[in-house]
Length: 98
Image (cartoon, rainbow, N blue to C red; front, side, top):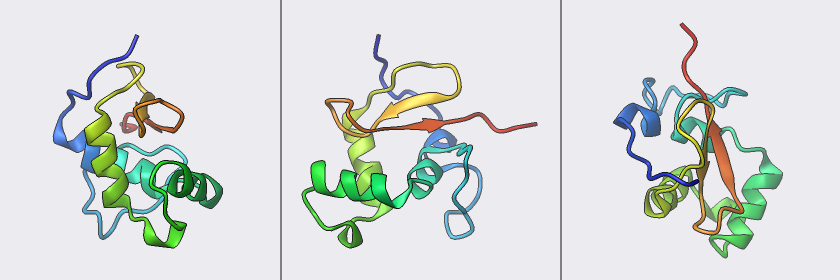
C-alpha cells in the first residue's frame, strides 16, 4: 500500500540548517537522505529520472520531484520515500535517535 507524504516540515528538511547538514548512513530527513546518496545512485537518478548529467543535478531539484511524486511505502521508520512516480528510485528516512 502506498501513502501520501503528509509529514511535518522537519521530515523533509530535517532539524539542522542545510548549510551545516552532512551525509549520514541514517538520514533523519528527506534532504539529508538525498545528500547521502552514493555517487553511483546519484548518477543513475540523474540519467534515468532527470535526463541530465549528475553534475547538473542538485538536491533541491530532486526534493521538488519527491514532493511532486508525493508517495511513500510505509509510515513507520525507516520510511521509504519514492523519488519517481514509478517507484524505481527511493530513499529511507529514519527517526532521530534520542
